[in-house]
Amino acid sequence: MPIDDFDLAIAPLKDLGGQRVWSLMISLFGDMARQEGQIIGGPVLSAIMTAMDVRPEAARVALHRLRKDKWIASEKHGRISHHSLTPAGRAQSQAASGRIYATPAELPDRWQMILTEDADSDAPEKAGFTALIPRLYVGNASLSVPIGAAALPGQDAPDWMKRQLEPASLAESYTQLSDALHRVARDLCAADTLTPLQIATLRCLIVHNWRRLALKHPALPRPLIRDDWAGLTAHQMVAELLSRYPRPDLPEIATV
Image 1 (tube, rainbow, N blue to C red):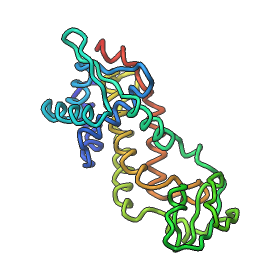
Image 2: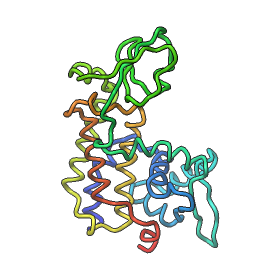
Image 3: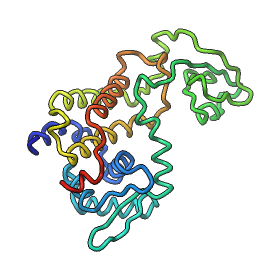
Image 4: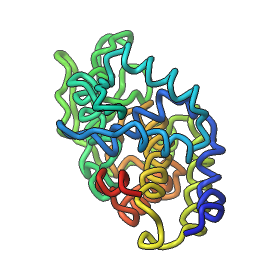
């Protein structure tokens, strides 16, 4: 696919905002080099950052920050720098990967409701529950119930409950992401017409824009999500596009 056409196709994802360079790098390494022993060479990192309109000086500052924060380790092999996640960075990426890469079909299909005695307790949210009203929480049926809380199995959830559980502060952002993903899906060519570098760039933008919203709230079981919620629509598009454009091997990118 010609570079100009590709740039136009992915522009909606680049225009969403919230593209902090160090966070983009975390998304990139989490998607392309999350396994132990996987590295991203300096030229490949530079090429992907350039494709996302990141200036070289901004990329250097972000890389320095991630090294200082013990997220990324760098080694020099001759004149080429090799970058990889540190054990701590890899552990955090692995911990978030289930939330980021699970498809809508893999969401839990059973839920529970718990009632606490103390309205100020943070134990339910720490356990992964979402507040419905004070002292009343909902979540995956497999979550551990905090000590002292009463639990009830979930039944059919009314529409008003599903709406109330949606993170209102992210409503506009999810709508914008859903719209952007639909435009990208419409305008992009088939995977076999894209270079490995283009696919890596595309996946980084998809994962990054999804990650920065999805990790701001707990994952809800599927019975607690409206079919037409923008967050679910975005999730479906993320899953579809990541499946349509599989992760390329790092050596393939390095040879382009």
